[in-house]
Length: 227
Image (tube, rainbow, N blue to C red; front, side, top):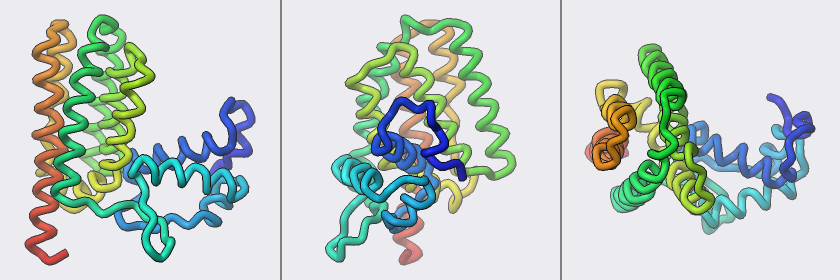
C-alpha cells in the first residue's frame, strides 16, 4: 500500500488526506457494515501518526459514516430499513437538484466520459467485481454533478454515499447481479437531449430501482433468514 507520506505533492494536511482516504473507502464499500476501525493499524497502514487518524475518525462519526459504541469501539453502522429509506430520500432530493444544476455544462465530451464509465461498470459486473461496480456507480453520478461544482451540494451528497457504500457493496455481493437495475441509459438520454425534467425522473428512477430495490431486497432477506 502506498502511504500518505509518499504523496508529497498532495496539498492537504495529513488529517485531510486520511479523511479523504477513509471517505473513499466507505463510499466504495471497502469497509463492511459492522466492521471495526482501529486507529493504530490504520495509521500504520497509511504511514501517518495516530493523531490525524483520530481527527479524521471524529469527522466521520459526526457525519454518521462511523459510530462510536458504548465500549468505545468504532465501527461502520449497521443498516436498518428506516435509515435506508431516509438515505434514499436524501439522495433523491440532493441528486436531482445537483443534476439539474449540471445540465448547462453538459456536452459531448462529458457524455462520452459517462458512456465509458458505464461500460466499465458493465464489464466489472460481468466478472462479479461488485466493489468495483459500487465505486464506479458513484463515479458515474459524481462526474455529472461535478460538471457545475457546488460547494454546498456535493459534500452533502457524498455524505449519503459514505453511509450507503458499505451496505450496498455487501448487498450486491450477497444478492448478485440479478438484483441490479441499470437506469444509466435513461440518464444519458436525458443529458443528450438536455431535458431537465426527464433527467430528474431518470435520477429518481435510478436511485429507486437500483440501490433502492437491491437494498430493500437484501434487508428483507436478512430479516427472513434471521441474520
